[in-house]
Image (cartoon, rainbow, N blue to C red; front, side):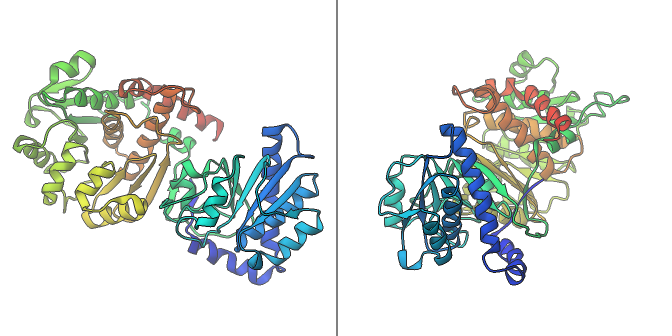
Length: 479
């Protein structure tokens, strides 16, 4: 797993090293790694190092010192280095002396460098950039390499509440922080520099592609269609037949077991997915091992009864879309369940459930809802956050918004529901499904790394099996 450590955890891990190592050792370790990344970035972008130019945006904290020391190291490699000091009297004394001794200079303007280092605010900073810093950043045309985190982005929540840096590359020191998982669009590519920290297990983590591929359920030598997981899907209505088609399609693509459908649009579902087994009502559906309920079912009394009856079972249940609106009006339906329950809201549905916009702290808000209701919550977004009632949280950064299209969530509900039916825990199933779903969107939109065209939910669905194969391949490669 990739782990993300809060600022308090990182500071606690730094303390014994700062107390025992010669003064400035950790900063120079960080600066050496930073200079190495910048050197590689210069080669990548310009074809060389010597004779290229780098500007440093230097604040008063340790990140400013890191930037100054890195500037001194770059200067010794033949790079022209200019430092713009936002608060000259409080600039890091030793770092500034090292830069000047190496031949770097201080200037009032950024100029036209090949790269810019953002050392304005460190991990102890909070809130948006101040006006002078914001104006300076706005004047930059070159790609920015952020020192530990993009200034103006909250290190623990990833929230952006005003002017902030958008980096092409972020160089993290010692540990990844929550910002690196939650604010990918601000961080760009992330490089981690080891500076010798000894850290405990983190409260926030992400499954690697190899871990998802390794855990993906595959048929064994003695499996049959029943033993591989049977998922029931309660979705769709005359007004929203596509929700049922997409949700069932996600379940079909994610597993080679069985999908059972209950709802009023069986003809539309079977026309697209003839392998699905349809029933008129829950009583005649047959045995399932997990339920998906909610996509496109409406919010009337009939929908309420469907959600109620599904949640009255002792099976794992995923509630999505209209099912969440039903729960918002009657939370008692889900509270107190002993079987695993997974809610999959987007931000608007989350606010409907809780009365709170989760944007200011997506991990904290998701954990709160999970703990208060005794459920697992998957909060959708570019960085999808999953939290269980035990406080464990996983995150999946989709690295883009290709999946932000109507019906995409219906596909996700089917994929995750199928995984739940195989016996995977709700948190793990949600994280695995989110990873496969985001990769399917990326494959549909381009080559898996770059978006070249917008997509529909149907196009995303068509790539779910391909995404699983890619994830399985990562297991072989160990990535």
